[in-house]
Picture 1 (cartoon, rainbow, N blue to C red):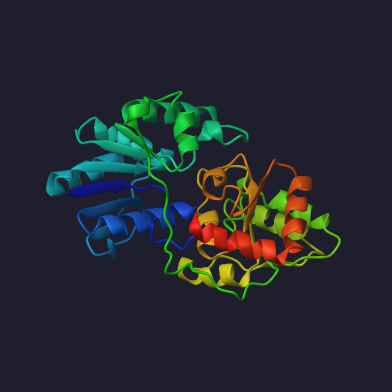
Picture 2: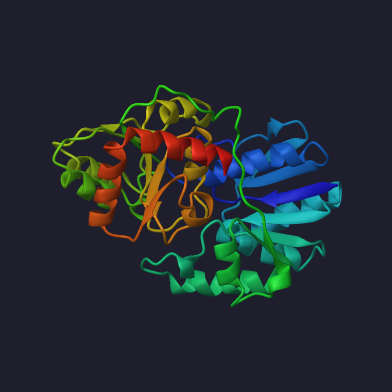
Length: 332
């Protein structure tokens, strides 16, 4: 079997944690490395580089066409040489390319949104919502990482064409360690949707200053990153910057609590990596964390800074509870 993958806006080879690179890159890389044990995979990305190997039977191929139609035509030309069996597109921009491909290549098309505009709860882009609705109508299957997202999609898409496939985690790399401290850890791009503002507001409400490590770099602009740095002044906040994914496990093991304060999180890979590392997770109950973390592996609260503050203090003051929740997370 040969799979044609479109990840237009970001490469699975790009280091996660800054710019447009995040959990999606990691998920794509891991998914196809494993699928490649029984099939061949070509991943098409925007860029001006020579093809690269992601692993055995997996190529990352770059096209420098900014126009979606031209990008699609380049893939169609490749199809004539490789005769793909399945098309899998990631994110709405790749879905636009998928619609162009579908007009000329009649193979099953699976789409993964990763984020869905109408569900984000922030200021919404109406044109993007319209495009995502069109992608839903035209693709053969939508792959969803959670039952919650699948349920939400049932209002717009036939239930039998929604496939729920939870994300996984490398439990060899992310594994328990008894040496964690009481440090808080945030992992992710410094992007407004990731909720660092509400986390820092919560830290200001804690009388005894607590250490927070932020692993990740700027997403949309340096200005947003610098604003967060300025907002965290006089707090014990350490901006570590982006690091390669293979080095991230050490930060989980060093931390005591992982905080995921995102305003929107379709699944929450950070939560899963924290659980594999036996670290409790704090986040908000209206995100994809509700299906992974639940009640045993951490604390999920209704969204406001007071609730977040209380959850942080509660776990900081209860080492035994942190330990129990961490090891309960491994068993989930």
